[in-house]
Length: 187
Length: 425
Image 1 (cartoon, rainbow over the protein chains, first blue to last red):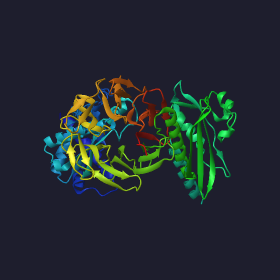
Image 2 (tube, rainbow over the protein chains, first blue to last red):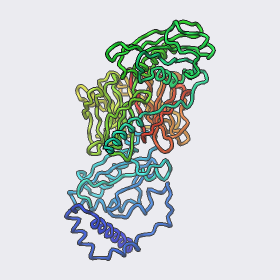
Image 3 (cartoon, rainbow over the protein chains, first blue to last red):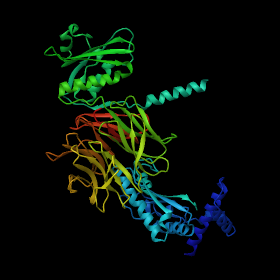
Image 4 (cartoon, chains in turn orange, purple):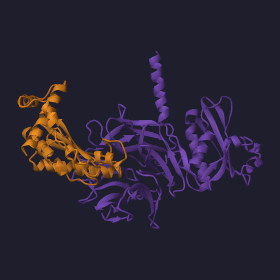
């Protein structure tokens, strides 16, 4: 249990350090503090070797949405996937969404837009309606975790903005999703 | 200087590419042979080949089989010059001849005549005055009149289509296009970095309503005047603003909003801005179209579990289910006589265009490929244009309401989707 928590922390450290190193734009103040906080705890190089290995769980189109490799349990994960014709949040994504909730609760200036998407099958406007259910499911999860409704906005794109272009099961699995897009106070 | 020229050429190339090329992929065995003789021109040669446009229009209807002009034995342009046996030997049932004469200024007189070859009698004799840049309009009108004379059905060649193109590499990937019904003379109405959806014509053909996610990435419904290019936002409530559909009297829009929780159908009075909620369910309700009498809406509803099509009487507020074939029937359109309901039907996991005769209650699946969507009926009710996929990208196809004639409209300009056929103009 402890090692999983440690792993998550270290992935977070790596990613934050990476972002800080790459970014040429001014970084938000609270983020800078966080980096100062964490960078002293562990050397960044170690995080590579301690990343969880999920290769024993086959990555199928059917199980794609609930595959643990998509969700690192931190706010670095910005995409939640869904099963065909469903709007339930996969259990593998719970920790990730809790991390977003925690961040939003402690950063009142932060705002996130929840962008719902479907795969290309079915009619366009009906898919807009279906995709909204997905973004509202994520919104509801975050509200239950105590996030203020003023920090959350939903928008539904239906099948209009696919992530993968193909017309196959795996592409469709990648396109059934909600993207968390911070419009203010990006973690 | 060289750079400037190559830029200019590039622009022209992209304009030319944007036109859709129409191929007849399935015709009728009983298509009627017709000879359309190249029109005689007087003086300077005119750019537009009117006879070729007329011939292509008639061919595309699937009801006519134009005779190859290279097979013609004589090319009369006046009634007195016709040698009947030249057309009887080609088994041509009808004959179209015509001529273009300069009228002075930059105007021309375009005259044509239609004959029954067996009887040897004249069926039509008309002329038009037009500038050269209107010759395609004249040609489509000639085709419309010939079509109506020979079939009893008004032609829909002199109409327009709207459709959405998507090119991911472009600065403005999403574009709304306006073109002749034969795919020529494409004009871009709107360019955007964000999705454009669900174009819908006003009944007078002068305006279009659509959904655009421009600027802030949120959906808004616009009314866009095609004549003046002025446009205004008519709906931007919280959540979904989708699926606009113009009422037959042009005074109202049916639309889908989720401001009260989830997708429901509303009507918006465009004069008073009064919004009326029309459905009150816990399920998803969207994709409304008006019946031609304006008394009811047909729309997609998830109230029975999966999506099915219902008809809502606007006065009583009562809805009845219209579709019972299979688990997925959605996005209806209706023929102008209110008799045939055309919609997306899932069969064996594939998405097809189906047509239901509401009078006889029969149902036909028209298409055989997969991922067909957004059917739109021609204003004369004979053809349905729809979006399909071929070689991994969106293309437009059209099919006759009886399924016998199939037409492909391949585009070299990336993804093409969501066609909307104009009313008579």
